[in-house]
Length: 282
Image (tube, rainbow, N blue to C red; front, side):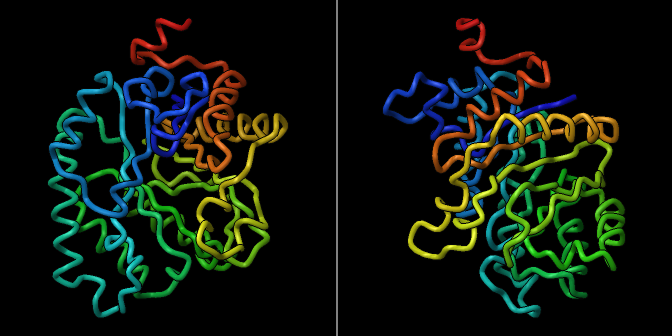
């Protein structure tokens, strides 16, 4: 099975005929069966907020929730503080928050996107195990942003370790030639779910710093040739996992939705159980 989604649902004007407003979740759910929620990285949402999301989507719709920044050590915690009371509390709050999604089978996975300074060293290897213990049997996907995990000397061991922990390795498309980029490694570590996140290939924007650095790095529109190449990769991953989920994050120029819909056409797939918008338009 192949599923496709975008990061957030509000900023994709192509889905609403380019109207100058935010896209509603109900409208988004007419096109895609999954969405990645990034707000949970900045603060753990209330349970009532999650329940409101559920009311806006069909029963089969699923969510990928980004782990909170304390859970992924984006606060720059020292090794001794990895499992501080503050960090443990956030794990507890996060697990409570997602209960409605787990109960209704609407949680696809929790995305642990680690910071660039989370490198392949013993303390961080141990922390991955701690994450599994703290999250129980919940589905987890791991995105590394430090190339040391993919060094030829350790890459196979990295993948085997994720497999033992029952975590999905996130294959990413981003500029790999820049100092803070990682290569696209298409190894599947969880037969239930393979994840492919597409950030774009804006190498210049990837390394620039400034007030809008986050926006610059995903300013990219994939070409037809690139999308055709992704389609081949997805087909390969589909032979190794029950589900392949592709998330487009190249949206600084509002290109994610168009690229995602085109990949859907190339793959020749249709999504069952979408919202009423899909039925009304086609």
